[in-house]
Length: 170
Figure 1 (tube, rainbow, N blue to C red):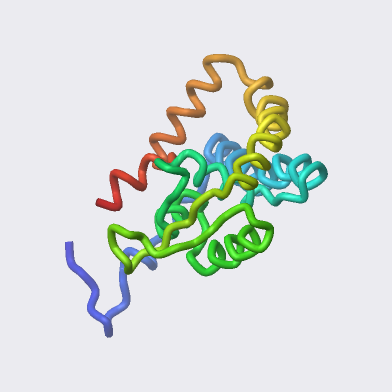
Figure 2 (figure 1 turned 120 degrees about the vertical axis):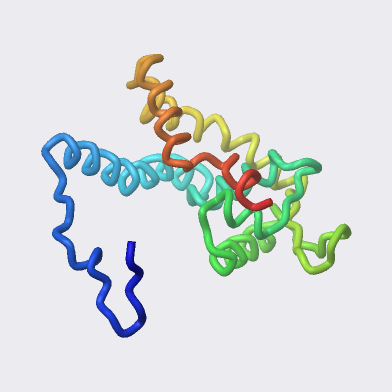
């Protein structure tokens, strides 16, 4: 296969696109609708009861699951699917509420650790049942066992699971 230079047009890019057939369009529309609509539906009860965005909740949750309830900001950014800049702003707000602290990583001072405080952990423990109810009501309960297994398989196949980070980042 010939590679286009900077001055030559890429012939593959000019080829006719592979348009979606009806089944592909249905699958794509379902996925993009899920990706765009579900976060807001999962966030609503958290925001109503605890004033938390879904991103803030997922940030606190990911920190709580890390060893010692502390995690590097770069890893946390990946796990929450946020840029370091966005995460830094959110963690700053969480710090102001005394739910998270930041400090240099003692293993490598080039990195910053985010750690869950006692009050942050208490908030997370209180908010978790609200989030779990939404997850069950909106995602898990409408699906049967076979659908849940298919969803997990599809997520793995599309490499959208948080475990990807540990495999890809090293």
